[in-house]
Structure formats: C-alpha cells, structure tokens
Image 1 (tube, rainbow, N blue to C red):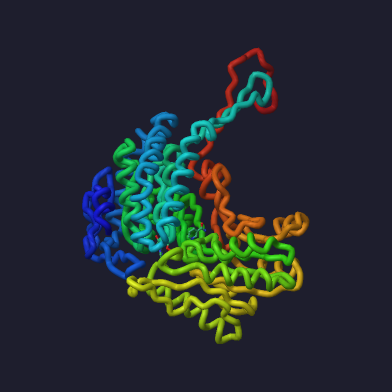
Image 2: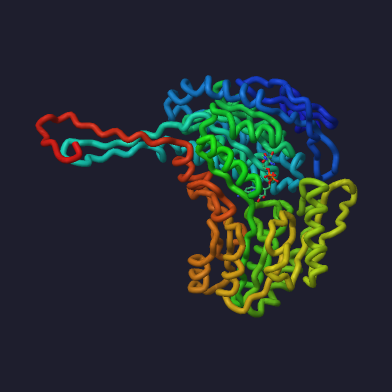
Length: 501
Ligand code: NAD
C-alpha cells in the first residue's frame, strides 16, 4: 500500500504490507474478532499479501446484531430528511476521497485505477439517489370512499444484512448501504474476505458523515459468518450478491428462517451481433464489455452470437482486443486460482475444436511477474454444448457462437440458465425490438455492451441470476427495505356506512 493511501486511511489499525489482522466494526468501534483463523488478503496485481482478515463466526455476528438492534429504534425514529442529511455528507466525503477510495479498490481487487475511479463514481451516484428517498418514499393518500381516507406509510424492515462479492469492493456494498439506511434500517455488512479493506474505509466515512454508532456494522469472514447471518433471529432481511451457487444456498437458508431475502447470482451474458451492426461501435463496445474489470463483472459480455456473416466485425473486434494491454489498460484477475480456472476453460475449448483468435493465456506483466494476469481472449467456433458456452468464466474471455438467424441466436440465449443481461447490436429498430421482447434477461442493451440501468432505474437479473422479488437498487429497493403500513381513517359520523367502512 502506498504511503499516501496509508496516510489517508486513518484506520483504527492500518493494514500494512504483511499479515496485519483487520478488525470488525461494531457499535461504532473497531473490535478484535475472536476468530481463531484468518485468511490472507492479497494484492492480486503483484501477488503479495497486504493484510489478514479474521474468519469471524456466530459470536461476532451476535455482537453486531445486538449493536444494530440497539440503535434501530432511535435511528428509525429519526426523521427521514435528517437521515438523508448524513448521506449528503457521505456523498461529499466520497467525492473528496475518490482517488484514495479508488486506490484501495485497485490495491485489493487488481482492477485498473480508471476502473476503480468509475466504481467509486457509481457509489456516489447510488448515494445521490438515496438522498432523494424522502421524496421518493413519501406515502400515498387517497379518499377511497366518501369521508374515508386510506394512506400508506413506509416503515423500515429492521436489521438488514448485506453480503457482498469480491468484484466491486466499494460499489456493491454501496448498492445497499445508503438506500437501506436512509430508509431507517440498521445494517451488518459482510464484505468478501478477498477484498475487506474498502468496507473499512466506508465505515470510517459513514462515521465521519455523522452516522450514529451501531447503525452500520462490519463483520469480516467467510461462509461461517454468512451462515450465522442467515440463522440469527435478530436479522430481518438479507441481501446477497455473488455466485449463483452461493446465492441459492443463502436464499434457501435465510428464507427458511423466515427472513426477507434478495440474492443476486452469477451471469452468462450474450451479445447478439447482426450483420447490419455499426462496425466500429460494435467492435469497441464488445471488446470493452468482455475485458473491462478483467471480465470480472456480472454484466460482462461472455458470449457473442454472430448472426450470418459478421466476420468484418469479428476481425475488428480482435484488433480492438489486441490493443488491450495487461498491466496497463487491463487489470489482474482476483487470484492465482481464478487465473488457472479461466485458462483451463480456454484450453478445454481449444481441445474441443474451438479456434483461439486472440490468446491471453500465460500472460506475464513486466515488473509484476507474480501478479495474476490473463490477457484478452477471443475464441471462435464455440458451440452451445461446450462448457465454456454454458458456464460463467469470469475472466476477459469472449466465446463466439454462430447462428443463421436472430431466432436461432435467441434460442441459444434463452437456453442458458442465467439471465442477467443480453445485448443486441444492429441498426434495425425492428430486429432490436424482437430481441428486447424475446431475450430471457433482466437487463437488455441495444448497441450497449454493459447495459447497467443507472439510477433511478433498478439493477437485477432474471432466472438463475437473481432469487427473490424486486431489484436491489433504484426505486425497487424501496419495496425491499420497507414495510408498507396501510391506515384507513374516518372522522365524519354523518357519512353513511357502506360495505367497507
Ligand atoms: P462468491 O459467491 O464466492 O462470494 C460471495 C460472498 O459469499 C462472499 O462474501 C463470500 O464470503 C460468501 N461465500 C462464499 N462461499 C460461501 C458459502 N459456501 N456459503 C456462504 N457464503 C459463502 O462470489 P465472488 O466470487 O466473491 O463474486 C463473483 C460472483 O459474483 C460472480 O458469479 C458474479 O457474477 C457475481 N456477481 C453478481 C452480481 C449481480 O448483480 N448479479 C454482481 C457482482 C458479482
């Protein structure tokens, strides 16, 4: 970690290069975990350990629940306009510290600095949206029959837990923190044990912004903490973002304990490219989508379905991919294990007869020889039955499949169990409309490779990419983080009694 960042990180315990063990944040204080085991936190760009994270368990979760529950009454009774004020200040603090927050993301996740800055900017945007919650969540009122009024007030769900993945250490926690807290809930965050540092800085900035102690808590760890969160009777709702395998486990376990749950899973996003697509725009968009954040985005292009003859676009796409240089405009993947897994998918596809047009295997970056890099990879001749066509690769790898018609391309897209995003590249409005209607995904792009809906629109996929009702951000999050109370009132005795009142 650079001195500048370490200086800015006024952590209770500064993570230093080495094996320093991080602390949990409970009741507004840094508290040592009672965990007997720790896990190394690596800087994946250089393959060096930068801290150790405690693998906490039920005791630490229980302490965090007591803290969150203890502060719930006073926080939920604080008027929403006052709660929003904390987040106006938090937003300003994120703006002030964007570079350092991004440097921390770069350090623990390995994505490039510009991608890290974009991540923090998205956190700022979500927080800006949360600041508008007083207006957006204002109740409804209607005279439902003569002299009788019905009104809805929104109440917080209570103590909510947010479990997050490694690929966006700053943004994904911020998908839930501002919205949930402005709406009056208190929270326990369980960040990915691979990238726990950003959450420490988030806790500090929230405190500096004036968030009362106990409203936000961080418990570090892995599976044991997640299971304790699902099981603990003092937690009312759980959000999860991560792989589909774990999303299913968390959804089943949390709901079996009668908690409200929303669990976002993995993805296998298909881009359907038609021969009339704009050559340059398509090639650069597809290349950026498959390689951004080293392909470790749940919105990344993973499969391209080329309809008819689009070889001119494939050629240009490969030219674009070759311009992406690991260690410069392409960051590392998260771990040695991830690098080996990604390269394994490429090799297996090659052995099954696919043609590697751009090969990112065995990539070594000068000066960062121990870093976990995979170069951009484009594979043609992939067929839908291959493992690389079916599973989430989560690396900078694009598999090209061929189809003779848009309907054949849609059949391939529809057959995939995931359903986060799908895109179509064409100049034809009619063809685009057909894909919008028939793609089986929650987020659709037209000539856009990463179709993330920006606030106030909400984020969430379909099928095996999401379990639970509603979306995690935007307006949809209001439903998840609140309980509507419906009150029917009548004060005028002269009004006749009807069948309802
Ligand atoms: P992961 O599922 O391995 O881990 C996510 C969280 O679950 C972490 O906090 C981890 O500690 C915990 N966890 C891991 N194994 C567990 C187990 N067996 N039981 C209980 N908890 C467990 O995911 P990851 O590798 O950190 O992140 C990458 C995945 O996240 C990809 O599949 C990606 O598509 C997905 N993702 C999805 C979205 C979305 O919006 N749909 C967004 C970002 C990432």
